[in-house]
Amino acid sequence: MKLRRILYVLGGLVVLCLLVVGGYALYLQLQYSRIPDHLELKVENPQEAVLQTGTTYSAVTWNIGFGAYDHDFSFFMDKGFMEDGTPVQGKQSRAGSLERVEANVGGVEDTLRDLNADFLLLQEVDEEATRSYQVNQRQWLTDAFPDKSAVYACNFHTAYLFYPVYEPHGIVNAGLLTLSGYAMDGAERRSYPVDQSFPTKFFDLDRCFAVQRLPVDGGKELVLINSHMSAYDEGGIIRQAQMELLCQVLEEEYRQGNYVIVGGDYNHVLGDTLGIFPSQQQVPPWVQTFDETMLPEGISVVYADNDQQVPTCRSCDLPYTKGVNYTSVLDGFLISDNVQARAVNVDTDFAYSDHNPVKLEFTLLP
Image (cartoon, rainbow, N blue to C red; front, side, top):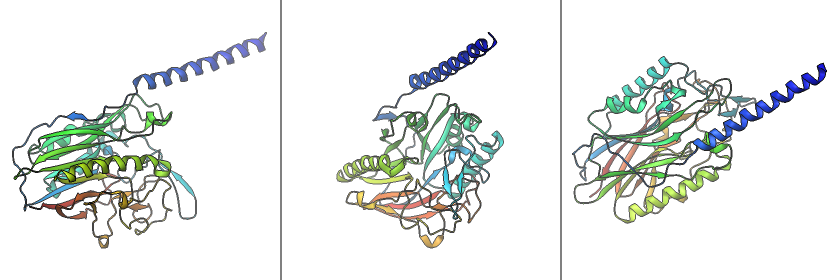
């Protein structure tokens, strides 16, 4: 009789666990949706100044890492290997504390002020998220630059992610924030292809790029694009599909005679930076090299001078120590050949994010 009761209890616990897991999977599925393609984006605080040909302007692209990635932070989804083959994996799914988020976002704001660019293209900007203690980074950075218009494109919206169990990632609403000191005629959100497999689709971002249209004196447009491509994509299949879509848009805009500039985090190694920076780690398995042969005619990558020895991204499978973590250049700009430009990788030593900003100085050719 006693054994039968134990079996009943154990059976009941198994059924309860199955109901909980099944109920949670149903909750995730019911909450899951993709944002529609070609979504019109609101331009807040519109500016009036119109771009001129022959004038030098500047833009900064920066993945700010949702205010979490100071030197002590490692991310639970990142895996890698040390030089001797020892595997390492990140630990945290949330920022260390509210105070650290505020310090990191404050550092981002101060750095952007020092760079004094006409355009800011920012990625991983949380609006409301468990992982960043509900600090509204979109509002913070929009308010910090009242002389610029703002366009926000959501690219991460989740139900409560109860993973990892020891520190759930929670609810996330995050996106791409573009700030402009010049007039915009409109903006549109384009949806990238993403991995729709189960359960990956619940944990990956709703990847996208934001297309901003800025009038140029003389009748043309500057098509300014803020982009963030997939990272955890074994074999690079999804990233290739994303590149194909982006290149299609670039080719269409260039053929129409527009100026084109794309800033963002490509999650591809740009140029010959695969292993040029000092490191005690192997090249991470997720690293893919940017295939410039995919770019349409008239479009090219703008590289910073490698002699600077400034990477734009560090590995996050362990806390940051200069010369230990793998680093490379994943961030930068694509431009059309009617734009003259040079880029500089800005060295913050990854103080506020796992990325360094990249600054572009450019001139629209008559």
